[in-house]
Image (cartoon, rainbow, N blue to C red; front, side, top):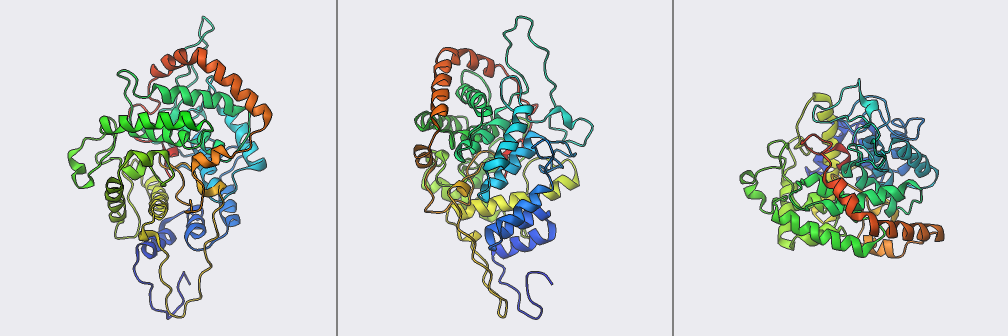
Amino acid sequence: MGPHMAGAPPLAPTPLARAEQFVWLSARVLEQRRFAYHFLGGDAEAVEAALAAYANEDGGYGHALEPDVRGPASQPLHTAHALRVLDSIGRCGGTQAERVCRYLTEASTRDGALPVVHPSARGYPVAPFVAVVDAPPPASNGLGRGDPRSSLLATGPVVGLLHRNRVWHAWLFRATDFCWAAVDAIGQGMRPTHPYEVEAAVAFLDGVPDRARAEAAADRLGRLVRERRLVVLEPAKAARQPVAPGYAPGEHHFAYDYARVPESLARRWFTDEEMALALDHLAAAQQEDGGWPITWRRWAPGPALEARPLVTLEALRTLRAHGRPCADRAPQAAGQPPRARTPAVTATAAATTTRNGALSSSATAAAPSPAARASTTSVPPVLKVCWAISAASRATGSSAASRRTRGRSRAWAGTRRPPSLSR
């Protein structure tokens, strides 16, 4: 019968009510259940059950969970997406996280990082802007020059999310060191960067335990974003600002792309007025059918259709996180049974990486900031010792790591965002 009772007057066309109709009409079962969880009082078990359909026996996720990479094989992008979903419902931990980390270990490059796309995607439909890079041969001198498959775009959001959820696994040590070297290399010399890479860096910095270093790195990136015009600060004049090389026409980035929630370190980069203008722009982007548009290049009808509900969910959650009424619940129609209240969000679920790097908009006003969460995290003694050893190694090897990272080519072949950084 649908969400409304027969004979009842229609709901008022609030932004959320229009988005709800769009989701029921166009979204996959997973996105429908996520919408119900975040806005209609649905339960987490239903989301988990829908997500399980994408899981593989190796601990990873596949089956086009990220719409731009098709096929059944497990992929880092799909697995990162699954982690964000679990994080948003407070289920990113325990044996489930352990299984995922085992997959991430197997999928890692020689640097301990993740590739954007694993070669197992070959033979299946993949967006033409996605570069599938094979492993290079071992260096003849035994020293290596860094693995060209290693990507901050794929690794940063996953590492930040796992740290934020206090997940302990050996894979995190090398992956964290890789991310620090990659973040430190951004903006050095004439090395080019682009908005999605910066968003991946923010996703890492918002969750990593070393808060002092994270804040210093975020401050530097914020200045770089403004100096290099990697953000549109006046949305009304967006058409006058060029997009990054390889991006689609109109694929601009705004303040909310970097700061999905007020607790993000990237929120400090923008004034209240700049943030308000960006959120006004986001709210106004809702289309007549109730959904939000995708801005990257469309390469096939199916992936575009599946991506719009994901973008719509992200827009609603971002607006709600910043206190905008656009994501308020629609009023009840006369005679309709009352909907259950949305369950409280736990501190674990209060933050997740998003399009590209910010925290989850499911955070509540009472949720502690990332810095507060990191400072109160109970770290096992063995973990503290390992981090101390890792920090000592960085002191002697950071310059070499920075040179290796600086020389890496973009795994995305100079094109648009990796899907893993959205939603």
